Length: 86
Image (cartoon, rainbow, N blue to C red; front, side, top):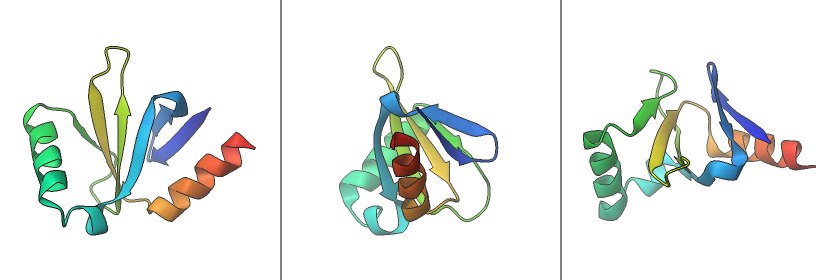
């Protein structure tokens, strides 16, 4: 199954690790560090340059993570994910 993250970005849900609320989870120093390291390694993909509401962590075939920054809320992404799985 596939999940639309915004604009023209779609991911395969079998590669999905997690969907996180950027405002709530970026309070943690570990999350800030993870996002900072991902950015330094060039593993962040901005789906939109609007105000970010969520970040989505996926892995590729080599088990390297990619972090997508999206303007779509976690609640909407969850609904899309559940709708696709039914």
